[in-house]
Length: 89
Image 1: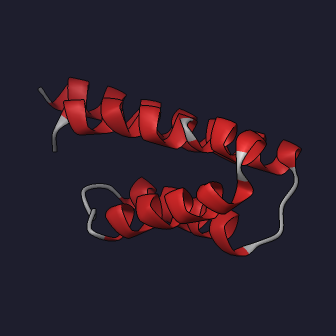
Image 2 (image 1 turned 120 degrees about the vertical axis):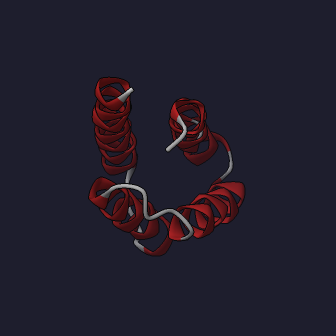
């Protein structure tokens, strides 16, 4: 469990929102890459929830509000993971 990884992951997930707004083709490719990365992570049960949300963004035809809401939900989950890591340290 690497706190830095999760801090960096917040940045990668946040990047989904401007990509959606600027270029939907790159958005889909980027979301797929983040999803693939998350498939290799079984550190916390919450990661599965994030992975499912990210996958949904890549396969569903969602609007801006749903993308925004999902990005910030994922960031909130990661913040909780970071807090758990800090408590364990």
